[in-house]
Amino acid sequence: MESNESRLAALKLELPPAPKSIGVYKPVVEINGLLYLSGHGPLHPDGSLTKGRVGADLDVAAGYQAARQTGLAILATLQKHCGSLDRIARLVKTLGLVYATPEFVDHPAVINGFSELMRDVFGEEHGVAARSAVGAVSLPGGMAVEVEAIFELVR
Image (cartoon, rainbow, N blue to C red):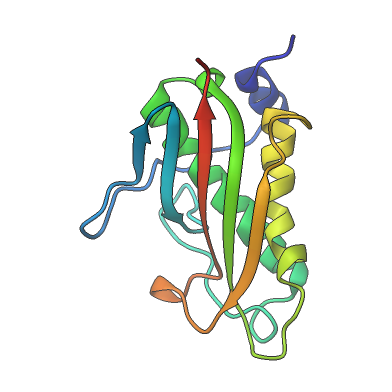
């Protein structure tokens, strides 16, 4: 059986450094075999964020890439907290926020950037979760996407 870590390695992706909290919160809280991840943004390895409003500054494809990059930041947090992605049993729930214009209606297509990455890393059965994808009038620092998620640990 292929492991989460081996699937990640096969994708040849570069994870950014695990984000640090910049407020009064923890990036991840572990309770009863579940990991609750605070909102993460599209953090790049150089520390920059993908910024801009989808529907004005960014198109759907750029928003998709921002959501995918947000997934990489979440994977970095999971690796730092767990030591290995192989401790993750499955993704349970995703909330994706898209900084978008009022007319923009393709939020799910943007958040697919995150969801497809999770499917590719954790597999079809364990990487596809319950999900909400909604628009936001603004996000911290002007970032294009913010995602929070709940993961189940291997028991």
